[in-house]
Image 1 (cartoon, rainbow, N blue to C red):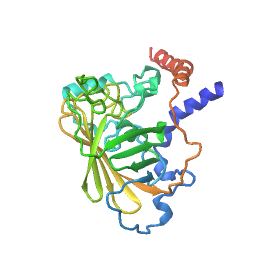
Image 2: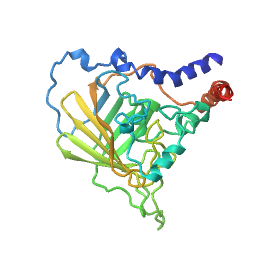
Image 3: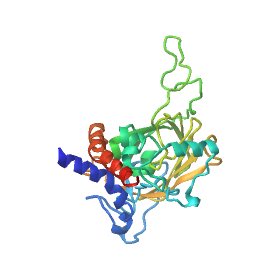
Image 4: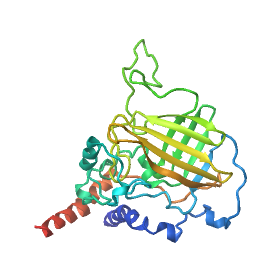
Length: 304
């Protein structure tokens, strides 16, 4: 048991340390390929209306890890990296107590719904926090995004439907003459997408559960959040992923949290063995009781 708790403590702390040097060290998954393997060899042309495949950050296995907040807006104390909060948005951010970033608190004092309670991270946090290998599957009316981290998945509808309105609940329709009065909030939201050119799919997502954060640093969102996600197929081997935050209640203007994260196409047979990453509520609680709690009490005592 003690050994497992030590491993859990390492799992919580390690991303904070490794993310600072991962790109320089060239961290890799066995069997995966990265841009450095091809020494500048050019790729072929991109296929039309096709972003399917197994994708991995093109530089290193940790290039998509952004522990201290969204990649383009790290919560590092630099005023230039602060999102454009409204007064209400800033108050909501200050109420979120993250264990990382310039305003971090001891993990035992954090109210992070994911790290403390193992609630689903939701979207876009799963991408803005710890984006790893993913697989995209296309059907005639959907794009399915399968994430390795936490083994989660999303549906992007591409059949021409619109985003749900307040009086609609997509997927329910009319049951026995009763139409639900409003869409049920989801951890992952409702997503609809369309091709804006031969190589670019843009989707919008709304209808979020209010228990999620935008990123690990605790950037908040309101019930007015809309996300714009862009997948651009740059060539045969590369996909670029961007995410824009649009929330007029909490932010004075839209802001780009992720700008063209470069992904490389992998073998369809690639299986990252031993890389399962799940949040265990029971072990998190034991970690808080045996490690984080006593550590926080010690810090408090030393400051008296």
